[in-house]
Amino acid sequence: QVQLVESGGGLVQAGGSLRLSCAASGRTFSSYTMGWFRQAPGKEREFVAGISWSGGTTYYADSVKGRFTISRDNAKNTAYLQMNVLKPEDTAVYYCAAGPAGLTPWHMTSGLLPDWGQGTQVTVSS
Image 1 (cartoon, rainbow, N blue to C red):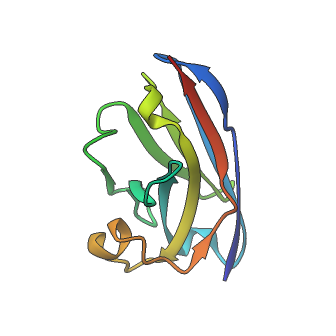
Image 2 (cartoon, rainbow, N blue to C red):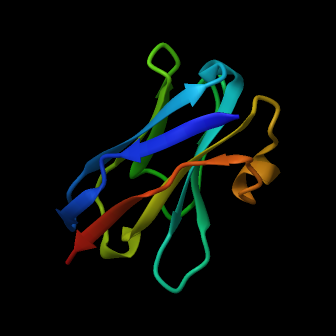
């Protein structure tokens, strides 16, 4: 099991940027596939971005492709989500999650990961 703590959320104007961080503790961070998800009020939680254990493979939801970048620093046990050109519809609580190294993209995009952080609020004003 890995413990995850998100940070970096806040209030930003449309067109602005934020970088979220997900600090991990517990077992070896580099053995985990990492993902970012979000949940807006009244909506289902949705997949945002995922990254393989090595960082060599990344994938994104269509709604954020070209604007968001997921990355990781295994030496710092931290995953990141750089969010640019933010839109009001990006407003949500953002969660990071961890799964095993062999997690399939289907499992990732379906949110079938065992370990989750507590979330950080991102609010984009128009």
